[in-house]
Every structure is written in C-alpha cells, then in structure tokens.
Image (cartoon, rainbow, N blue to C red; front, side, top):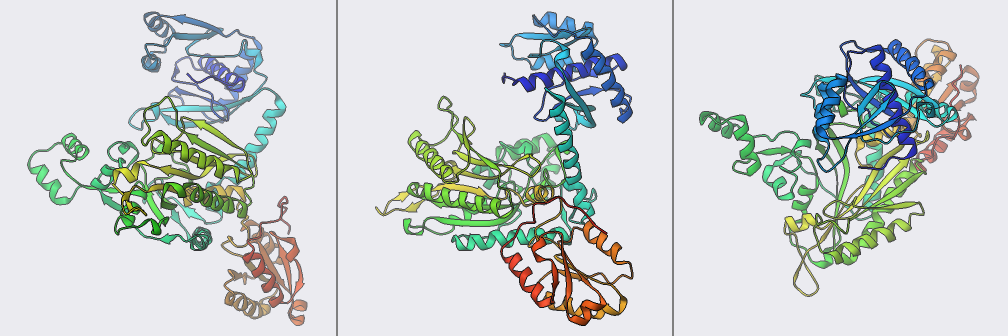
Length: 616
C-alpha cells in the first residue's frame, strides 16, 4: 500500500468527516469510497436525493460541527468475519462488502472510527478531527461505481483541505482563475472547437478558428522536422487486426480500444453458423478470424513503412513523422473537453537507429521538445526519467542494452538544464522513457511531451539493417511526440494563454475599426493590403459606437485592432491598439504597421506579461 504524505492524511481524514456529516443529514445514504486526491478528496455516495449547492452548504456546516467535536480517529483491526459483521451493523452493505473483497488476503483488515462513524479503511488518518483547520466542499459530479458505465451512477462529492486557511484561500483563488481559463468555456466562446453528441462523445470537431491554431502549430513543428531531416509519411486510420497482434496492442490492451471491425461476409457466415457474440469475441482474440481495428497507435504502421525496403547502416537513422490520428476507448466519465478524448491526432515520429546513435537521437528529440515549450512560453517544466525495476522480469532486451539506453537518457536530460527525477519501475516494458511535466501560468501541471526507447517492437516485427560487417542487425526504435496530442496540447494552450494567443497563433490577428460608414472603403483597402501579406484580418463594418467595437475586440481576444478615424484617414495613418504587445501601439502608416507585425509573427513573439484590462 502506498504511503500517504501528511497532506494526503489530512485530506483522507476530511473525507471521513464528510461521510460522517452526510450520514447525519441523510442516514439512508450508502457509501462507497472516499480517497484523497492530488487536489483534495472525494466520497462516492448512493443517495436518491440529488444533491445541489444548497446541500453542500448544509453538509459543510455539519462537517464543521464534527470537527469542533474533536473526534478521535481510532484504528480497529479485525478478522474478515468480524469485518462482515461490522459492515452489516453499520448498514453499509451495498458497496462496502465488495470493497472488503478487494482487500488482499495477505493484508490486515482494518476500520477507522471517529465518533459514531466507522468505515472500512486502511488509513492512515490524523489524530483528531480538530487537526482539520481549513477545508471546502467544491462540487458534485456523477461517477459510475468502480468506473464502469454498466454499474450504477453514484454522486461524487468533491472537496479540498489544507493545513492552513491561507493555503486554502490561495488554492481557491487559483481555482477561480482555472474556471475563467477553462478551455471548454473559452473554446465555445471563441468558437475554437465543438463536441456534438450526434457525432460522438470525445470526438472533436475543429471549427475554423480552432483549425487555424492547429494548422499553425503543425506548420511550426513541420518546419523544424524538415530542418532535422525527418521524412513525412501518411498512414490509414484503420489496419488489420493481425498487425496489432504482432505489435502486442491486441488483444492485451483491447479494453482501451474500439471493438474490432469484422468483414461483412465473415459476419454473415458466422451468423448462419449460429456463432454467438461471445464466440466471435473469442475467435477475434485467438486469431481464428481476422478483422480490422481503428488505429490505436501509429507505430506499427511506421514500422511497416520502414520495413517496406531494405536498409544499410549508412541509411540510419531513419526518422518518420506523421500527424497521425488514433482512437482509444475512454470511459464516458473520463472524457473532458479536448484534454481527454476518444479520437486524437499525435505529432508522432518514430526513429530507427543503431545502438551507438541512441544518445544523439534522444538529445535531438529533447531539443525539439524544449524548443516547443520555449516558443510557447512554457518555461517551467520538469523531466521524469522512467527506468526499469532491476528486481522485475517484465522487461524485454538484455541488461547491457538497458544500461546503455538509460545512461543515454540521463546524459540527454542533463543537457536541458532543468531538474529531472529518476523513477525506477516506471519504464515501459520495452524500454526507458522521458516524460515532460509542464507547469502552466497558474501553477497546474500537465504531462505533455514524451520520448521512449523501444527494443521490443523491432524484435516483434523482425526488423533489421545490414551493418558494416555485411550482417543483419536489429535497429533500436525511438518514439517521440513533443505535443503529445494536438487536442490535449491545444486544450492546455487555451488555458495557458486564457484564450489570448500570441499573434502568430491567433485565429484573427488584426481587426480594423472604421469610426464612420464612409470610412469602410478605406478600411477595406487596408484589409486588402494586410491580406496580401497573409495576415488574418477583418473589418468591423457594423454601424456601432467605437467603444462597443473595442469591447468586442477584447471579448473576442483579438491581439491587435486598428482605429481608423477621419483624421487618420486624411493623414494616411491608423491608430494601432494592441492587447498583445504594447510596443506595436501608436499612429502608423498601414505599411509600417504591417512590417512590424510580420516581424512579430516571424519571431513568434509572446504576449506581454500583464493582467488583461479590457477598456471601452
């Protein structure tokens, strides 16, 4: 069992106080589990009454009473038979008996009691309820029992707790900022993406504004790949099951994949033979019948591209890149806007190299990831190196190869100039890896780019190249994705910039605001000039007050807007206003502004570090 930190102990104890209060107010409640989380705690409950914000206030008030009573947390160890009796005596049989079955036979069964409340629990907890100094209930959400949508949906009550009120207040401030930056809200407000139930949950529709951002990111990384001698490839969205049996993705990871697609003729034949759904599934798993699979990973197809022609050691490294769309089956309760989806496009690449080339190729991958983060103002990030567990036998490849690859990762990580930690046991079974954990502007961490060394797939697909000795040798494969997925990365970017993107990414870069209707033709001429330079520009020709037009620029988060009044028009000037970069402001000729803006775009200049203050 994982050891809890003091903060986790505090939050775990607060979840028990929450359950105590709920049972006092709603004694008919059936409890499931209430663990601590990275940001707080929750308790899953089965209650016919649907809780709302007013109920949370009442529960919170009752929790304060429990804390004031200074109840002691007491550990009670017992046998399984005694545990069953305690669960029956507490009236919590619906879910707790199942949770008791989850406790390994080798583990001591225990309960924790505070006041009248007793709960099946391994602990640990703080000593007394008064140790809980600062807490807050946050929200209520639906959650399927054990995360299975075939089970009953429970109510999950979320909360958080901190050692002090100052820390709680600081967290609540960050939470409010996070709500204001929520990519689901901003995505709708700024018309960046849409998820439609008629299309399918977790399947993103990139609307024109969002498509601009995605395309600019792809252009940016594609240019860097060209300079780094990557070759672009394109592969299908669907492949034969046999391909994924060879790679090991099917049937071992089938729970996170869409179901296989069987050829119509095969389905018709099996139906005539009286084949049941269960028999069909078993035959697919065993390989007795073949089918197709929505692509869960790009790597098997890139392997087939590499293997489509012979290679000499002189050809290596071979670097194949693709913005490849893949599909994963996520539980509906796990879906979250663009950051957790069922179909997503990876900025994927696979490098095939010799063992001696591993270090240099990993360094090149890490440099690319660092460039992406630096360009986008994500300067705070840390690196995790996933190493093998020396006591485990799950890893493929010999120890000498692993030692060499792990040393190469360490050396490459040191060149980044940032902190990194080593995590034994966190390597994939096929090789060590590096993950990048990025901190956004309000302090939240996101796992984004990754680089992985792979000895397994070249072996499974019997890949080879001809060495200097004229003999066959096995290449090493490196997986890398600086963005991770375009959907997740853009979701993070929306929140990181709060929708106020740097000019080079902004869907609308400039808006021209003529002050009178008779100035619209001149505004159109300026628009035409800027469009010839491929600047994304519009004219607000609506008959409205200038203040209203400026407010709309701020609402739409347009980086730059040009005010065209009669005096400016007569002098051949525009008044440049910039939400993004104040250095661009002032009275300028359209050509002068265009030159400065094009340099801003070419430099991928970040927005000024300031609070946004919309003005009328």
